Amino acid sequence: MTRKVISVTPETSVRTTAKLMADNKISGVPVVDDKGNLVGMVTEADLLRGRKEAADREESWLTMLADGEGLAPDFVNYVRTQNNMVRVVMHHDVASIAENTPLSEVAQDMVDKGVKRLPVVADGKLVGIVSRADLIRALGARRG
Image (cartoon, rainbow, N blue to C red; front, side, top):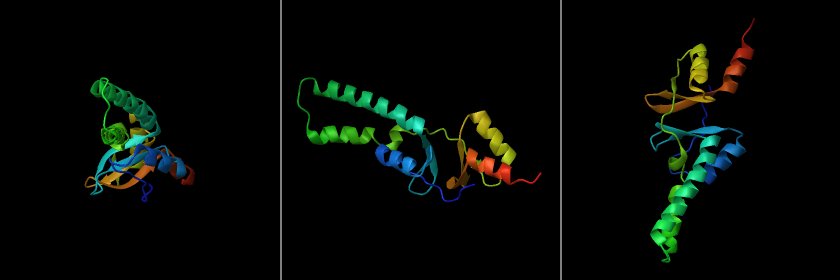
């Protein structure tokens, strides 16, 4: 388990999140609220899928509202800002595990749920993350 978890908030921009993931060579990050409670997860796939959906929403909003009228630049910026936040692209149905979950169960959960990482929570708060790489390292460290 990695205890020093890189995470974002729902209000973090998609761009900042993408840069954070690229700089740290990770493919997903937990999303936490201001109290450290796990509220979601955002992955590379979410960022790519979400950006397309946000652009489509932005275009339909602006087309619907403009209807030949000029829109205030502040309003256009507001719509774009709202569409570029993690809360728009993250998924809320996040599988997580407790600190004392056996490795065999963690591995099975990853396979069953088709995920690459599982956040570790204690009383709803994010305390760590277990990735497939962590499991491989643990397997390699075993004697026998």
